[in-house]
Image (tube, rainbow, N blue to C red; front, side):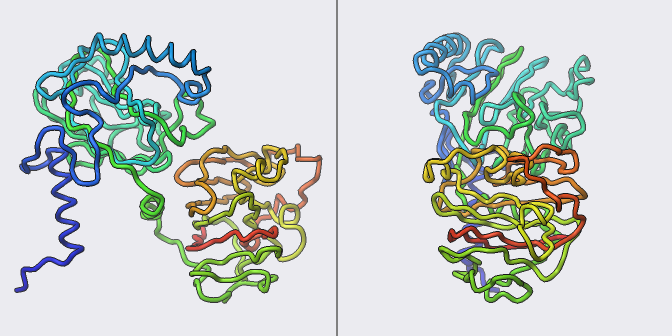
Length: 445
């Protein structure tokens, strides 16, 4: 038998060893607070460098504060935090009181590794991008069984009752006196959590505690919460996740049933002004100065679509939803979902209606902004159309969830006669800009 490992096998083995070393999930020796390959240490094992004080406070409001007021608030929180946090034998220790240990740096998509050890009656958690929280319980405290303590740690406790991720899938806590190890992967608002090697949350949308109508901020700090009892932390490591890996992770969940509708080589299965579009490196792209709506020959009633798109600076396009094959996409079809560079206003020196921004149901329902990647980078988007309801998830963030049937006020008072269509074609509504789309898949519902 050939005992040599391929490069892929060796990479997988070393990655696994690094994870085990960081989390303590198996007997692999690792120096305390020394990060595995690809990670950096948030806690250096010696002092509180890189940490400030924090609280349960909306990070958007924190960033919007006047710099002098924010500096004053930082100083107050940090003085309080340092009175209750210390470093002992390479462990970050909190006495159960005080403000939270909060990273000075903000993070977007990441993989976080954390070891913790706590005591009876303690209650803690980890804030992600400043939002509460991945819960840490005393799973034996009967007084909190009504809150879910008996289900164990690792759930997204501040999600709405019954929402995915609210409670951990399994009880994975170790007994008091033993170290527990978290692995947390966050892409957009999607969170997966492993506790002591067992997955307790799988790709759940983390709700924004401060405003549930908005996704959580695109970037924010990691916070280690304190709440009622001593807790110790060590091996706090983070690895930032780039665009390619983020898109792969998003596509790896719920992909069953999706079928390609564009082969990356030609326009087989498509109709419309195809001469106004071109195929470049496996992507369909609107030609500069050209436009019009191209669409699938097949029609769809209820469906989900997944795709990647890339917009140049200031560019404009759209997704045709239940398009009849002729007429103005935004009005004759059920809708046009905007595909728009987030710097459109600056580039064109134009003020947009909120119902014109990226992801919006054009002229009908506005989408949340601030979740698109910079021009020239690929974005991952999923659209679900069910009856008259439309959901848009951009880079793992739910930016729109609305029902067109309930809307009776339209931008510029322009009626949308097609908004009640129950089926139609899917396509792209070009507006003179070289916007690209690739990996286009649709699942009928």
